[in-house]
Length: 267
Length: 240
Image (cartoon, rainbow over all chains, first blue to last red; front, side, top):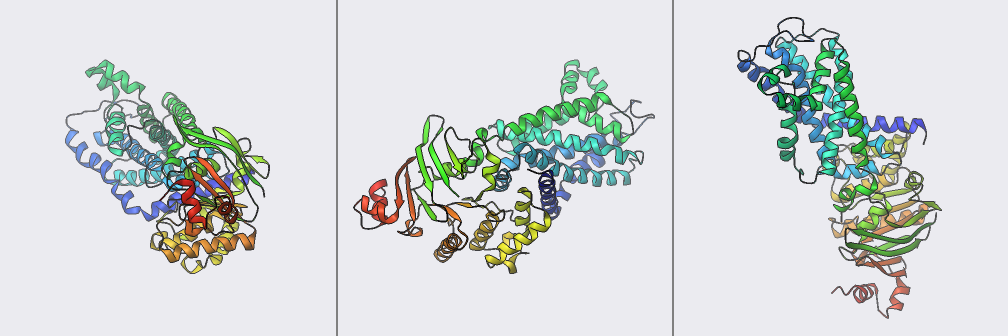
């Protein structure tokens, strides 16, 4: 296979994802309602309860809204990635998954490209969310909007790979409700998305350690630090490492030896 | 192009789905894979398209092993799956372009080949319609056009007429036969509908994972002392 073949394939998969995004734009718009409710309603209610001290990367006292914006960016990606990855394997996209896997190009390349394509669409949603957040007064440094991009892409790849892994290996979680209860909510709540971890440590040290072992925590911190133009090698390193491991396992799930699910549903 | 399946066996857990299936397809001919539901046709297609891994045996496409050189082999195969595998929200043309990209074709090549295939299938005027707006027969034609986009020499169709009315079924079947005659395409058409098979076709009858007959329709009728394919099929499979 020539390098150009890979490039054409990459472009084709990206184009398809954006066309689908455009076709289903109302669905994507409604997906923004959830994080906006958190930002506008939940944060207003909890502002008084959860005072935030000065913690890196922030250099002054900040509002609660400001604190949760990076976590809500992560939340958008979390929901999208899980929903996208699950639908790749279980329902709507089963047919197009077969078409994807019929390509002569290597499956790991096809799957990572597909996850990246879904990730880019999530990233676009995050930017729309950040624009609205800016309108309600959350104003990170201007260059932060650019610096955040690699962290967002990395996060979407990590969570997409996790979704694929769950969809292919854990048969019990066949529907989105199961994944919500057992994956999305635990990952979201046991992270630094809604509260700084030192607060968690005060409440319960073992919960604190669970949060520390949750890769979503580090993804959110990578987003938070880059949005404020600070470098957090630990968060970026862990997110990148987990992404690599999850991608390896997720793509391994699509070797022909394990794709019974894709073949048998047509039988 | 020669296509040969050698001693293919496949099990789902303890259940044997295919047992020692061997056959060779003749270049440029229409082959019917006939079998009742549950005979193992879709599993065989899964193996030929690498959605499933070969457990035993191998498939050789022009001498290239599907096991050892999957990428080369996949370039020579076009597939139409039993269930719809088109993106309903995209147009027919967009679906074709996507498939072309997956095979490494440039946008320019995709456009040229896509329009050529759509024209051949009388679909050019519907090219910009969302697939959702097309009827079942048209959708199937788009799927075949898509399967031929990368110019394969073998076309696999897994019960392609499921859900179509009689007229569309007949038209699709005739169209694929024309492709064999005009382009020298080798076709493997899986079905459980005997009326889609003609006596001069090469016919394979699969039942409970075993290949019970393999030859032209006339020859296997003679072998079974049967008047026609329907009788032959019923004799071999016990289907009433």
